[in-house]
Image (cartoon, rainbow, N blue to C red; front, side):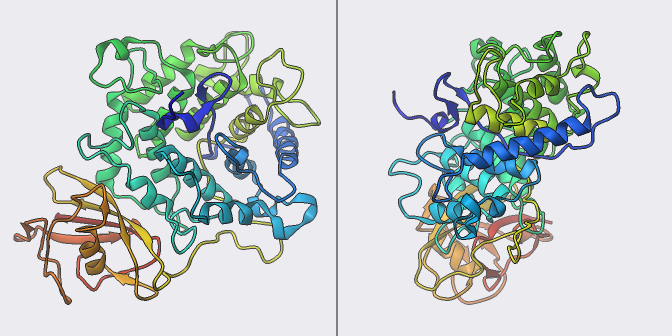
Length: 472
């Protein structure tokens, strides 16, 4: 089977998506059928089970679809990855081992796809590793930018594999800066929102493959899993839960509820993974999965179903209701959803003495090649997005050096064709042939900061996400 963009998000046994992350929704009303105490017990036991999956060398990640998704489940449940150790060996804590893996030149493979970097971004962020500053040479945000489709604005990776774009939105919007800012500009967020909306099926849900422009695909039955992921992608991009498309998605999910159990009747039947994805989509949108539309006529909710799938005190979740043992992937998906998670969450404060909440490269390393994420918006709607390769000569670089490098070493190409002034210092007066005019001038934002006058000497540091735009 040829490797596709969607392959790294599929459950091997069912060829369906198998991953999620965490946006917290932990406060449940008194009317909920599963109580806060039951959820607390589920989280405690679920963390115990996922901790048991750690290898002796401290690792979770491996080839293909691996247990690294446990990091965002841990975060949703309030456990820091740096606190997860094999036999108490803090030198092999899960965060350090994962960061070391992502820093290697051989990761992810000789033929990477965009979802490799999206998966890593979501999980690194939840583990407390700044995804843009994994190491002096590894910037996962820039890696994702390199898959921008210049001929299909808003898509990341081949558009036929729509899930690559959904997870780009989840990763780029969900993995915020250490200060809590969304690091990508609104123009990029809007482009992704447009594509996600265009792929919504007539029944209100989504599927893994592209539907935009294809009446047959738009009319096809939607998938529970991708509906959860796509509605989360919209919500983390700033779309409110009251938006028409979110309401349509919610109505689709409601129509698939099984009254007697609270499960969703998914494409592959009732199962923990699909239920987990749907609940995570609701969580990410701030829609409580235990009340209102998701409390069935028989008084059951999707969280009730997930709790019923968990073995206690062992803590693992079974995949199918009839299974007699736990599944690692189902346990990750189930715990993350029960804990109130969407598709990633900020890392909890560690309990390990001296362990910081965040780790990341602090400066550029002179002579070490790296990548930086760049967007150029001239105000006409022709947004350019690229990953820029450069080799710094100091601990920082400059906007001028970044723009100069982009002219010859950007992926995709064409992000920058010309800069005025072409050397020295001073305000950027023209970019790609579009000059300042009156109040419309070139401005720059670094890691989601406010836009200010773009100058060649503007400092750019390791992992900075740079947005340049022309406007008032």
